[in-house]
Image (cartoon, rainbow, N blue to C red; front, side, top):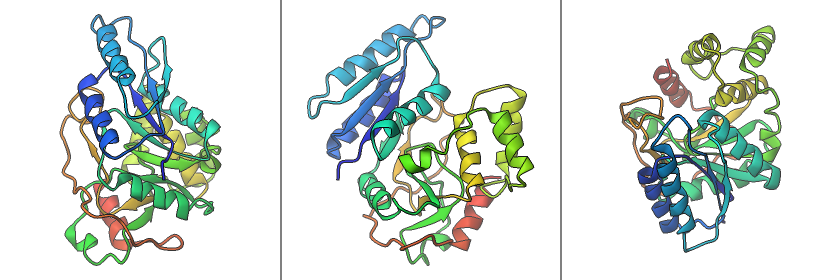
Length: 277
């Protein structure tokens, strides 16, 4: 199953090279690259963007589609633009960024979940990157995945039928609406209200938080693996949120055990809530 996959990239050719190499190794062929343009204020940007685009043009195992931004739109606009574009043409899609390295069974996990939960309106997407979970959570698990109300942005997938709900892109409006509706903003982590407050104070655009609030509003869930199917290599590059690479456990086996419907693992939920404080 070759899943339509977007790769959002900007000015990090060294990272993108690793992503492209991995995509080739995994046999991914249905690819669309979204290449952000250079910043006028950064003298080295144009050359780095040129290197990125040259690398994309050199792909020889498939013929990717490429969308070029002539000017810099920034990560916060580039990712939702890519998602909007993909779901305009496809019923389901994967969204990768240039620092997300798919692991050997990433596409197996995404494909299985996209198929199994395509018609479950309470499932809004699938997460590729998962923080390190305790062994006491992983070992007793009877399935290879669980459900949690927090969405993830590092290697994720969704469906058009879910993404179409992302209509409110203004964070203050979405936040005020969630408060008025009595939505528990901490159900995906107590860090969420703090992040929203910070973004509002700084008047910054943040598509992931408005999308999260939509998932909250519809009592939606994301599918999580107990082990990460994505390695994030962008920490410390100046674009990711943290300069420190957090510990993770990379998936070593092909997932095979999936619940028919939403199953809540109380131990996994508690572990993620402890992580996202």
